Length: 174
Image (cartoon, helix red, strand yellow):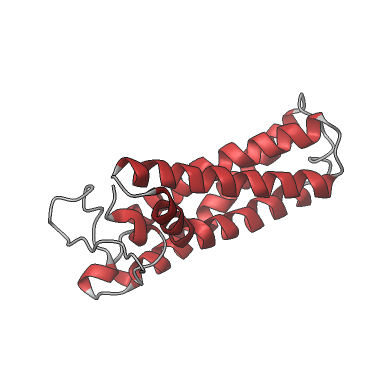
């Protein structure tokens, strides 16, 4: 038996009605506010940043090769990103298996885009990966990479929400 996310309706007193979701009003991505997209991206960025920073700190602290550090950071970004979404969905009374499905549907593309962007940026900054945990270059590059990832992922989330995908999937549970 396949379970589906409940449909919410605009103005029904849901989460905060974040503006217009194209999935509900049929207006497509152009009817989704930038504020809605930014909030969804910030939610994703929070989980990603926790995993990303933790992975970079562990990998750099242990002296892992840059590729291993990036792989660890990406893996932890997905774990923390999904966990953050699942926390809210589980609080809404959804079972663990369905909460995982919802998190996967809501966050996979956003996290993937964010991780490609932020890891590409930090790897591209000369010396950042080898700078060490006490270096301003390391922390500055990491912070800059997350800002760039936020800026470039926000339009992706806006487009997805307008199609009833991404954050729109989890919106009914907030």
